[in-house]
Length: 166
Image (tube, rainbow, N blue to C red; front, side, top):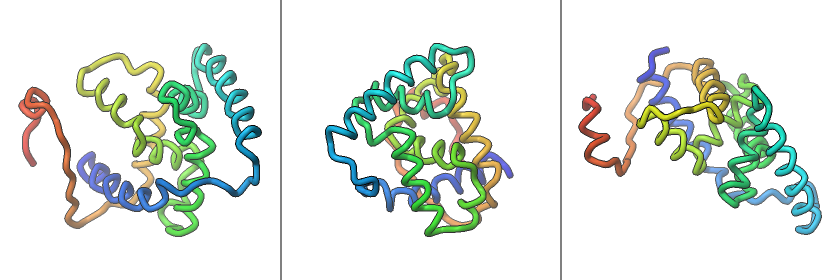
C-alpha cells in the first residue's frame, strides 16, 4: 500500500474514531478517587518505563498523558475506545493488535501535534519512535481506500512551501 493510500485511509479512520472520541468510560464502576489513585500508579510506572532503553507503546502514551495533564489520553482509555470501534467496524479494524489500534487513536489525540512537529522539523523521535513504528504497522495492515477524502489544516507558510500539492 502506497503512502498516499495509507494517508487517505488513516484520514477516513479518523472520522470513524471521532465517533467515540468523547465517550466517557464508566464501565469499570470506579469512583473518582480510585481512578485518581490508579492514574497516579500508572504515571509512576510510565516514568520508570521511559527510562529504559526501549520504552513500550503503553509507557510512552501514559507519559504523554501525564505531560498533557489529561488522563483521557492514557493507554487504557485509548484501548477502551479502540475496542468500541473494532466492535462496530469489525474488519478491517478487528485485525489490528491492541497496540496498533491504540497507536491510531493516540495519533488522533493531541499527540499528533508533537509527532508531526518533530517529523516536519526533522527533530529527534527517540521517545515517540515506538508510536510512529506501531502506527505505520497498523496502517500497513489496512486495505487500500479509494474515494474522496477532505482534510483541513492550518500549516505555516514555510511548511507549505516545502511540500508539493497533489
